[in-house]
Image (cartoon, rainbow, N blue to C red):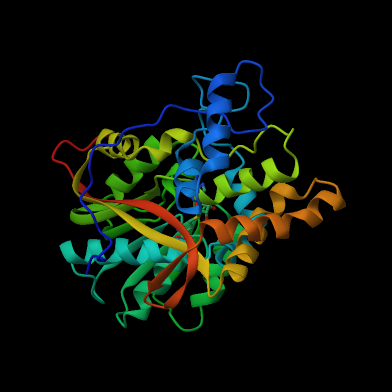
Length: 349
Ligand SMILES: C[S@@+](CC[C@H](N)C(=O)[O-])C[C@H]1O[C@@H](n2cnc3c(N)ncnc32)[C@H](O)[C@@H]1O
């Protein structure tokens, strides 16, 4: 079942980029900054999230000093470092998106115990866990480039599920033969790949001709916007943090183009709201503080002590109630996109 939050995907229009308050780059447009500042100060809480998420700090056409057009080559290192706390720091948002993605793929081709499934860029194995919780026992290959992630996934399923195989494997070089998988799921992974085009080609190559794949992404980096907002309040003169994923991945059309270029036809797509949150606003602020801790690690102790208070204030301004299958809570809205794809007739090699 697709959630009631599902909405048809419309054309994506980009807002003109604006730098955040606190930007120190002289090339940035001061007038625009002041206008942002005025709107920001007069906005009520419901407008604030829109204002924050619709701004585009240091996009390449305004300020090229800090924005890289490609994701960092150290994505795997970063995920290795955060593996232990990864799942707790997502506040359930990635799991919620994965649940929708799995529902969509199963709607097109049911998942059964006879399925052979790729959990690509599996992280700690959230996708595999959701599939197993449905009670079926398919063969699942859970693979990821970060060995610490894989070791958590392996430990999670090794004893109870011999049909789950976890392996360290970059998405750009899957070690499976052509036409292996009935279902292939890449939840929030492709944008981190060093070579996403090659990763998409590997999804196409390893998918059976009648198989179905699903690829997800975000259209808004809400947690990073909040981190930047904390930074703006605590250290207003610092240049804003740069999120770890290139901005182009916020545009669903980019993902669509990468998939098409790999010979995958988009069969269905959806934009969905999910939430990063906890039971209370305080718990959500705590999750976000943990999510951000590495970014703030180099700050002075005095500045770091200001983070939880600033975070809680911002979260209280922005948080909205949510209900999901695991229960209700208060959280930050995240918008994800889901692409369900099949191999096209002219598969790229
Ligand atoms: C945001 S996490 C998503 C994890 C998981 N799919 C989930 O739903 O929670 C992104 C994952 O992509 C993995 N990753 C990054 N680059 C990769 C690559 N080139 N090949 C395979 N996995 C990669 C990271 O190690 C990390 O586990």
